Image (cartoon, rainbow, N blue to C red; front, side, top):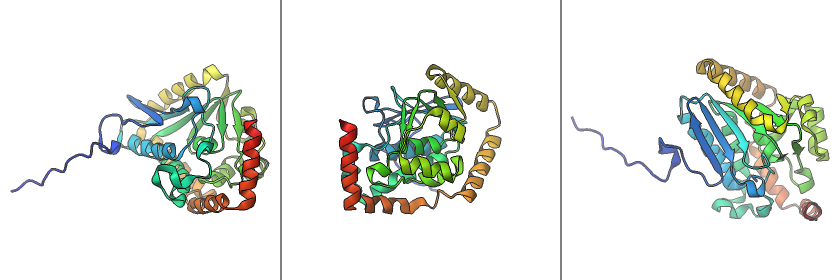
Length: 278
């Protein structure tokens, strides 16, 4: 009997490797049953560029290949969780990683789905600014622990674009429609205590306590049955999808592309960016 030909491994594809993959804008690590996923552009407050969004989705899929991992702590390096979309390339999505405007606009939705569907239980450890897309990333995690002085804001409408990436249905099911209208339409900043009162956060602690609390929660969950944790997670996610589906937000990308070509939206965006840069 002839053996099947062995196919060569693609060394450029981190998903085919048993070793920990290297990313340009993230760090990932595994220690026993616990994983870490860290946004790693601290000099810019961990913005979510197209590259970062694609790497987050790739990292989530890589963690799914690490069958022993039961929990993943998601955080930002430095003094921020994430300052949201990378405004240095705002309005120039066609140049992002060679993708078309539609493909680039879709990367955030794909990221949020990959994070939400990750087999491991995800714990967002949040401090510093958590803005716009950073809130969508945190909202795709299973648990959220924030520092008391965390700065939350959803400035998309002020930037002339809708909150996309499935952010609206995720917020509606976590904090309800009235609070979602308030925070998304007014773009006003809000505190960690308010976010906890609305049900978005599991706990609010002093900044130096956030990461130790996330690590303790990860250790506690790691002692439980992986099968039971996964069954519980998927059951909760299925119930949430029935309440307010985020998987159907594929068309969010179309709204973003339209907004990037709308004259009034572009004018208001330019005025907003000029104000915040002063």
